[in-house]
Image (tube, rainbow, N blue to C red):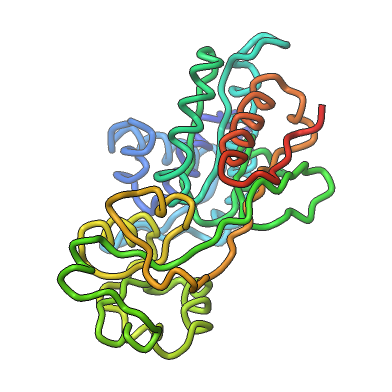
Length: 302
């Protein structure tokens, strides 16, 4: 095996592995299909082995390729951290901060908070990653994560900033056309919008009783922003976060005494990043944003 294996070739290998095709890797990296194929073949030649088997159905990673997934991903994360840490002189509130958050909060709640951060610190650049699976803060895949649970790792710093109530909402037009339900039993005459395959969300629905069984949902989607958008459009009744939706004239609360659940919100960062000025500025900006909804929120210690 040759020792001359470049990071660029490993980056292409990881993209092919994660995207499942040469064309997908090319789109992700902004490279042409022939370039990706040529670089992958060059890597295989340097390693003296095949990393994928080719067939009419596409590429299938070999056992060796699968064993290289985590080392390649670790290198990609390290490269991203290197770039972010080198994006500003030490001590200046400038550079890139990567933030991970659920799709609902990223679409509905964080834009205003991040706009305020950028108004205070225009030299900060923010990378916003929307995902409903937790990002690896310990491995510094992201600098800051907004989570619904307290992290167990001792190297992480976390502050609980909110306990957000969730309830049922529908558009005024829908309620005018279909009537306002006064009891849980009345929901049998209404269109409900709920989860599709998310086990966590389906468990919450089941806890509310048979009225919220999956088979009862007129429209099913695991996207929380889509659920709220459907309710706003008059498609039915959906669960949403009360502080946000109660202030939204496009929806009205249904059965206001019904609390579907309480969603804890934690801001999390690595202890090594807690006093980096750009990370600190975004962390505190997010805390301020949630403080406006939850007065018991706390900020990162100085």
